[in-house]
Image (cartoon, rainbow, N blue to C red):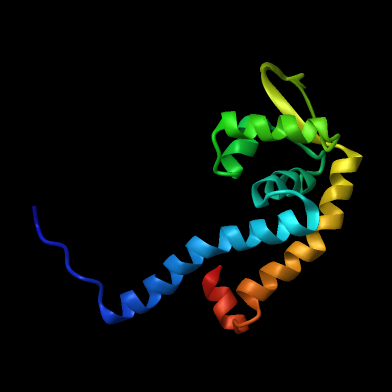
Length: 139
């Protein structure tokens, strides 16, 4: 097996902060959302994804893919959100083998109430110290 080269100084200078961010950012967002809205970042992502659809509806399989989740995990989360009245589950009329999740009015209200604090925290943690060109590079 060939030996791997070490990171260059420039690569290490980029990699270490990125790795640190990838590790602490999810928990920092979870803390804010749990404190302010009683939901996890994952749950907020599911609600927000549905809210961005014109119909407020997605197939569970598409929602899972977009959330980088297993269908099983997503299904459990959607079931909990359904119990809270934020999401409705129903068969896809186009394909009875798939299930759809639709954001309810209460779910939309939850997203609308939660988003300002979440956006403020993301700006504080990610964007506030970046110049416009750095935000473009991040994208």
